[in-house]
Image (cartoon, rainbow, N blue to C red; front, side, top):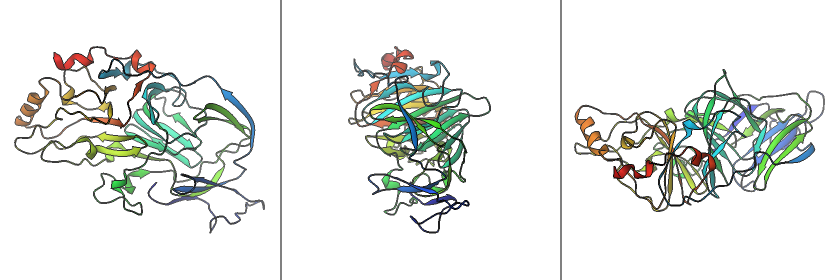
Length: 391
């Protein structure tokens, strides 16, 4: 994270004694990235965070096999056709992935168990519903349009609120997810040209303390799943400070960058991870050159696969393709893609008739290695999509 926060009670100085009211000492835990050479936070526990009493290998929920995108083809997946149920951790249905990132869809209707992803950061985009994110750092309430970024190793759980089914796109990285470096000063402050700032980020504001005894936590590592039972509930933190913590950012707070003619995808970049970027396509003024073509030109990103989740609004360039809210399109690096037949002319005509803004809302993940396909994606695929440009 690019800036420092403090929540709850912490001692005056780092790494000094922090007495409890009963005369004992709070247990200090340093959460640090990159061998403690990057961002970190200090958490202060009522009990030892190292005290486990049981470790069990977990076989259920083992990762589904991904298959190559062969024959090479653009794809359309209808996530809205996937069955609802389960939770936001074990209920994830794999859509695509590679060695850098795994992309899944969940329609959760129940709380998850405590979970810790120890192989990388996660970014969860809430497409609909409301959810309470609980962690050792505290609570974040998230709703439609929120990205929730969860640092590696954070013990947390997801609790749907108000009887809602929470539909979400989950992005699991093999490393860290951060704001793009070009948006930050050398000291980590958001710069004036960045499309969002520190004020737009929401983090826990007070500790969440649970006084309980033995508590299981599902832990994912590169080797698979383990269920560790802790001697005390991990939510026993009385305070923390540092630059590493979970936070939420709503897509409606992304400030689009516009040009007189159509701007390329990097202007929509929101986060970056190892081997991929995350972009937000938000409602914005249309390109305003008098002869502008106000939708994307045909393009071929020779180094990336493009995975696009359509979250809302009207996507003019995809008219006639079958794409709708909840759809995912996958345009692989070996394929040139662009507007559907007739979409350019329709967009130009709409501007002539007075249209001045877009309503599109989408989350895009561009990967720098090819994406393999998950069983859930293949189960909800629209097999006619690849041929829609030839109609």
